[in-house]
Image (cartoon, rainbow over all chains, first blue to last red; front, top):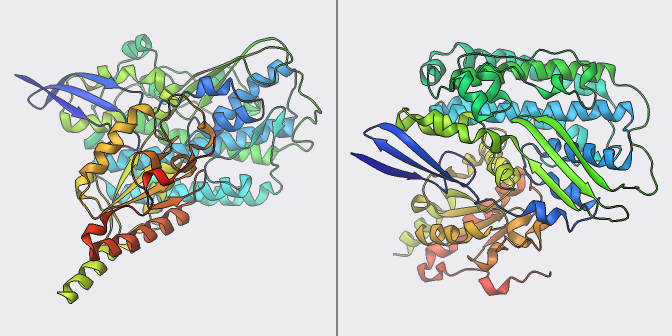
Length: 360
Length: 164
C-alpha cells in the first residue's frame, strides 16, 4: 500500500519554505510532487515600477546567496541597452567578486549537505571556513551579503590593495585543502552516505535540461565561463571539473573541485588586476528601445536576464529572469524515485536549491 | 513558590530554543541567522538551540516580507508554539517589507499577522545584531515566564503601521 508523506513548507533541514509531497511504498519513494511559490514576491513585476538605479538594488535581493551574479547579469544586459563597455579593471573586479561568491556559496552548500548527512561537526567546520570568505568579501565591498558592487558601466568599489586580499586567499586555500576537500573526497562517512544516492544519468540530465554543477556531475561538460565568456573570464585559465557518476557524491566532488578552480581564478585575477577606471563616468544613461539578454554562470548554474526598455523611459519595460534552480528542480522527481525516504532531504539539497531565486 | 518562579525566569532566559521561519525572504537573513549559530558567533553560548519543530520552541525567528502563500502558514506556526513565546523579526523585510514594498503578492509586514517583540533591522542584519535580538527576546521571555498571562504581545499587531 502506498501512502503520502508531506514535507514542509517550513522545514527542519533546509532554510527555505517549499513543500514536497512524497508517495511511498514502505521505505521507498515511488513518486514526488513539489509545491513552490512560498517565496513569490512578484519581483519581475516590481522591477517594471523601479527606475534604472532602483532596479539594481531590487534585483540584488532576488537571492541572498548569489546576490552579486544577479546584479552582474542585469548590469550586463543594461550595458547592452546603453552601449557602455565597462573598463578592464571593472571586468576583473566583477570576476573576483563573482568567484568569491561561488566560493562562499559552495562552502555553504557543503556545510548544509554535511548537516543533512548527519555530519554536524563538518557543518560547523564549513561555516567557520565560510566566515573567512565572508571576511574577504567584507574587506572588498564592506558588506557580508548584498555587496552592491555592480553598476551600469562598471563597479562601485575598487580593490585598492589586491596583495592583502591575496594573502587572505592563501590562508583560505590552505584551510580548504586541509579540511574540506579531503573529508568530502576520502571520508568513509561521506562516501557511504552519498555514493549511489539520487542518481541522474547523463541522458536524463540532458532531457530534463539541468544546468551548472548538476549537469557537470552527470557528465555534461557545460560552463558559461568557458562557453560564452563574460566579464574577464576569457583571460582566465581554469578547468571545468566533470564527473560521470551522477550521484550525490559526484555533485559533492564537482563542487569541491570547483572551489579549487575558483581559488585558481581568484589568484590570476588578483595578480593581473589592470590599472584604470572602475566605471564609465556618464552623466545620463541613454537607453535605446529594445530587448537585451545576458547570461552568466551563477554558483548553481546558468542565470539569464532579458531586459526590455523603451527609449526615454526611466523604468524597464520588462525584466525576465531565468534562474538555475528553476531548471534543476524537475530533476528532483527523477532522482527521488526509488530512493529511501531518509535520503530524500540529502537528494533535494544536492541540487543546491534556492527557492527565493525560483519563486522570485 | 517565589523561588520556583525565579528559577523558571532564569531557566527561560538562559535556554531559549529557536525556531526559524522563512516567510519569503531572499535567503540573506537566513544565512546570516545560520552564521550566528556557528562557531564564529556561537549563539549556543546564550543557551540557544535551533529546533526543527515550533512545538519545541520558545522564540520564533521570522525572516522575509510575508508572501501571500506564507501568511497562513505563519499564523499556524505561531499558534503551534507553546506559550510563553517571543517573536524576533530578522531583517528589514518583516519590519517594513523593505525593497519589495508595494508588491501585490505580499501581505506584509509581519506585524499585521503575528505580534512581534524584537525587530532586528538591516538588509541583512549582521550575525552579532541577530544575537543581540535573540538575547533581548530571551529577557522578554523571562518576564513572561513570571506572569504566564503576560504571554500577551509587547507590540500589538495593529500598533504597527507602515507608511506607504
